[in-house]
Length: 287
Image 1 (cartoon, rainbow, N blue to C red):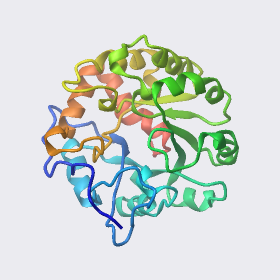
Image 2 (tube, rainbow, N blue to C red):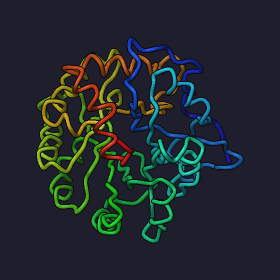
Image 3 (cartoon, one colour):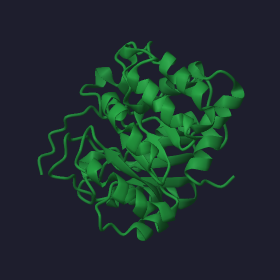
Image 4 (cartoon, rainbow, N blue to C red):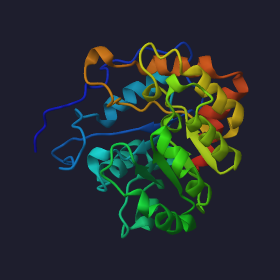
């Protein structure tokens, strides 16, 4: 297996945020990669990340004060969820959950027992279930109380939104619903996402930097529109180890990402909702 890395590694050290996250705060989106002798990457992967292991993740999360977490299956592993479910085991089933990528015949109940709470469709990086399987998989996971998580570009969301509204399970939209900050907070993608939020059965992840470019100062209007539309169904995640970046010079610090969230939030009660209460409800953490 060729291990020529196409992404920069996550920062070895995370700077402290202005304020640590509140007690019970959840990182609702990150990935674990490796060790590659135990968990080899998919041959069909769209990129090759450096290892990003559980101890490294915990160093970052502890600096921010994040004590609950949701490990998301990345496209570099396709539908082999072993690394993601192993990370749940390492981090502790009580405070960890998994979002998996599955095929039609996946053993869903066994995955649920191991900590899975949702299925991801990735229409950006691929290497997983195609969107043609959306309705069929939604019907299969509905009895488990799972949700569908989608990584889409904004224009794809506009087209897909009517199908999503008709699914029998909740829908979670990755990375600011795929909207582009340069298009503004009133773009067709933002409108489509907010219409889904209005149904009461959709959620959005305020993992924002993929929607923008340095200096990232156009993200706030998107986040604030989502927070106004549905403060009870917004969650936040680091997206560690940040595979978007090819060089260390581009890499963002996770302490800064938590500072951005503080800048977007209107008050302390909403901070508590986004970091603690909302993910506890969505991912079935104990009260």
